[in-house]
Length: 422
Image 1 (cartoon, helix red, strand yellow):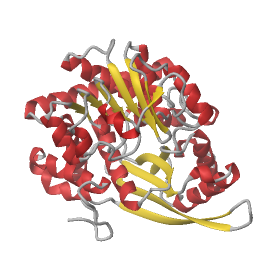
Image 2 (cartoon, rainbow, N blue to C red; image 1 turned 180 degrees about the vertical axis):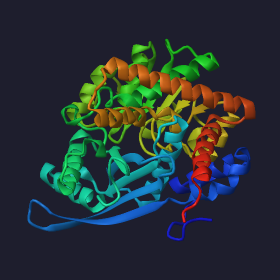
Image 3 (spheres, one colour; image 1 turned 90 degrees about the horizontal axis):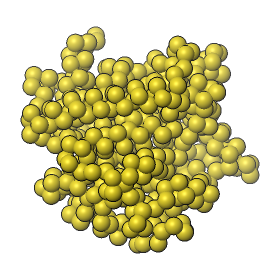
């Protein structure tokens, strides 16, 4: 049964999530009687965000905050600013956060937020006004013990600082733990910026080892060269891999001998995209999916690997740096072609894991070194993937279904033990 106000298609984000839940039902045993709770967000908030623009006119933006599950702890999930943000997308992203947090056994539920806006069209002052008004509007459901936002697409530490300050002003006390991904001097954590990309690398390294793929000399293609894609590319390059292709909203660049990831990051920072990078040749966007590589890292937006593209991929290992980049039909095609997919709900969980570290550090006002952060992150990610891999081998199922089986069992066990109120 779908929610009355959302009519998902099979390849929409929410439709993809629902199909993933359906696939895991046979592995839940008696807990399956609670499974319908996984298909219904606990709370969905839609807010109007009016601001006065620099030219004196009034603009209205639509914002969302969805709390999918709070059964295992406070909601946790990012906020994205993008012109294509919809309620259905935010619902799916919040649900994937529930799965992700449970998969790595963090004491969080799943939540997500967003505003339908192209932030590049706003001045810095307009962006601040919009962020503060959005924070005030969702303030009644967020909090350090209720729901903790974080950066996502087109949001960053500065936006988190504005959110933290706004919430603090409205509640009358500085509350650093209300958001994560903050600047260091406002209670942020070392290692947070590159944490998601590091998680992609760590799970990719472990997966490659298990399938006998040597990272040294392996060719890697990365879609999305923002925070996640660039950090993962950098770590793979340091591990001896050749990052041969990179794609983002601006274009696609290719170098069969390997792109200089540091120079490419500097170029993206200076120009806003990979297009025009002198260290590689431009190629047509759709040709990216035909690049000869062993490892593909989709780190952009959802639904990028379609069924048609899945049938063309040369890679043997797909590391989902983005949320929901592979449709269900594409997943089946990749499985038939013996392409291993490390799913988003474990592969990109490094970011929320270090967000958890940040949240803990804020409560204690005691902060760890970056080496300590990275060591703790590696240990959690390696352990979580090993457990999921064992479940996959035991039931002869994909890593995605195994991740959902592990996560859903934890969520529904907590739901069953808490019971229903009243």
